[in-house]
Length: 87
Image 1 (cartoon, rainbow, N blue to C red):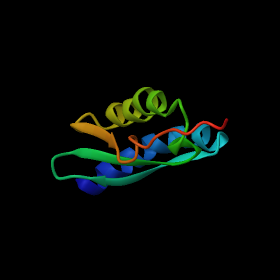
Image 2 (spheres, rainbow, N blue to C red; image 1 turned 180 degrees about the vertical axis):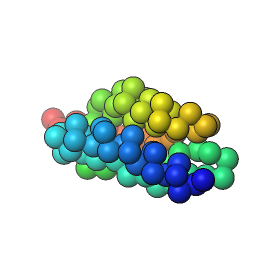
Image 3 (cartoon, one colour; image 1 turned 90 degrees about the vertical axis):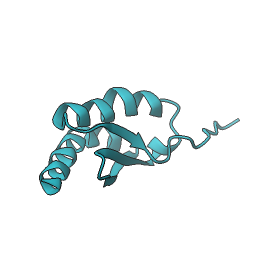
Image 4 (cartoon, rainbow, N blue to C red; image 1 turned 135 degrees about the vertical axis):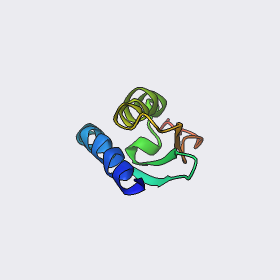
């Protein structure tokens, strides 16, 4: 069952990857815990983008929850990094 769930999560993320890649970013599935928490890592430009919270909540989290309703939570392991904007 875990393998099927991972495949469904990856399929959901694959639908959004072209949009992330167009802006120089990406996302990686880090793990699915035993208590059904999905952990993602934002990569590339997504790590420091000021819109990353919206991308995560309205895009990635929503897509995963829609594809795999049994998931309890979706977390980004690197969302708390400070955004540095060029002067």
